[in-house]
Image 1 (cartoon, rainbow, N blue to C red):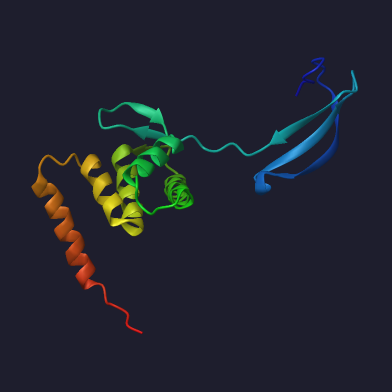
Image 2 (cartoon, rainbow, N blue to C red; image 1 turned 135 degrees about the horizontal axis):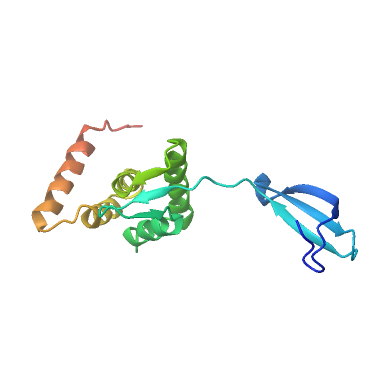
Length: 159
């Protein structure tokens, strides 16, 4: 590592401590040439995950893109930004845990729908309508019927 002031590549570490909620290490350094001090951060490199789109093209997984699509589906719904961020973190963790370097966009879409299903029914329907490219009102009716059927199967808890 080079000094940002003089470019010398010898420094001594004065202090090290955890940073960013333990995800990084903050190091305070002093250049052995110009004696100026500066701070560096060390953190593990996240594996790169590539998304294979429907047309066969590849692009890097973009957490923000996924968050924006969920946020759009939840527009004007009682869903907090924290809950959506948590859902994106869950999806990202599941994808990275699969230890695959590539994942299809359809797999990400299915995981997003699974998350929305547990959060808000309207958001789930909105997301599904775009993701599955609904063409007519009967497509909407079919997904609503399916959700109503599942809701009837769930046992109700009475106090």
